[in-house]
Every structure is written in structure tokens, then in C-alpha cells.
Image: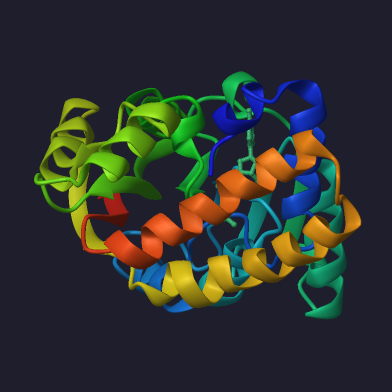
Length: 258
Ligand code: SAM
């Protein structure tokens, strides 16, 4: 679910949109095993890599990355409750010294060229467009460093009308895997691996938690048309995925900067 949804319900809608995500373990589809697979596909990294995680959300993948890499992860996002949650979880999991949470927009990243061995982003580069996002990752990673990013993709061309409409409204720039592989090459990166996230990355790890939150918020905001419209959109998004998960998904792209 993108923030475009809330632009149609205004600032008031945005408030409920953020409330819906507050407290969820993930702010998008994801899976620890996929995070590990993508990291393991990377080449030429030092024993304790410097990693940047762009649009980290509550940071499930940030913590997994810190664990699997043995390195230091700087995680950026613009939603402070996500960053607070990440700091608390890092402390509880004994990772406080290796995870830093910074409130910074991906459209205005202050780190210099080549500052990181790895630049990571799960389900967030779409916010500035995948091509622009990859270019920014390529700027931030040192030569020989690696990039891992997930992006929503179309898995079949014969989209049912309601799926086509949803993507047209939410993210008209969505492409198939091949189109995204061309972007990776256009940005000058060498592909190391790519794979589609399993359905459970959406259903179990993301939507199951969102569904519980939506029910709680429906009771809390009964009679509030703006809140209920945001929640209706979320339910519609979850229904579409239940019915049409063969048609779209998230693809992990792992690449190296020459
Ligand atoms: N990577 C996380 C995950 O998989 O759980 C979060 C993915 S969520 C779909 C997108 C994230 O991007 C949200 O946490 C949101 O707050 C963040 N975001 C939105 N606009 C942003 C911006 N301009 N700069 C940095 N993060 C942003």
C-alpha cells in the first residue's frame, strides 16, 4: 500500500495510514530467509561491511542484516515511530552498537559518494522510482560494493481488470522482472542474483498483522469516514493479493557496482 492512497483522503487520511503501520513488524512484504539469501549472494565484501538500509521501516531486515553480515547498519526512514521501534528491538536483540537509526529522506541523503560497502532497500525505492532509487544506491556504494533491493513486479502479462486498475492507481510505473533487469543494467550494475519473494512474505509476514490492526482500528474509528476509507483500501489491497498473488509479487535484485 502506498502513500498515494492517503493523498486521496488528505492529511487526515495520512494520519490513519501511519496509525495502521505503527506497531506492525514489517511495513511491507519481506522474509528473513530472503534477506539472508540476498546478502549471501553478494561478493567481495569485507568481514564487517558498512551497510545503508534505505526506507528501513520497523527494521526487521535491518536487524537480520546486522546479524548475518557482522557489520554496521545505518538505517534511514522518515517515520520516527518505525525508527524508535528499530532502536528498541536492536537493544533487546543485543545489536544496539551495530545498528544506527537516522531520520533522513531517501530523496535528500547526506552521505557522500561511495560511503558504504552495501546499500540495501526492501520495498522502498519505489517511493522515488526504482531507476532513480538504483542510481542513488549506486552513488552511495563504493566501487566493488553491492546493492540489494526489492521491487514490486508483474509476474504475468494477462492482468485481471481490477488488478490492472489497482496498479494504475497505486504505482503505474510497475514493470515485469525483465524490465527491472534492464534498469539494473542501465544503471551500470552487474546482476548477482534475483528471485521472487514467497507468498508467505506477503500473507504471513505482512498482511496477517495488518488485518488484525485494521479490525482493531475499525472498532476504534467507527463512524469516522476518513479512517474507514483508509481501512477499506487496505482490505481491498489484501483481498486482491489473496485472489491474484500469481499475477504480481516482489522481486529481490542483488547486484554489484563494477
Ligand atoms: N523496508 C521496510 C520493510 O520492508 O518493512 C519498509 C518498507 S515500507 C513499504 C516503505 C518505507 O519507506 C516506510 O517505512 C516509509 O516510512 C518509508 N519512507 C517513505 N518515504 C520515505 C522517504 N522519503 N525517505 C525514506 N523513507 C521513506
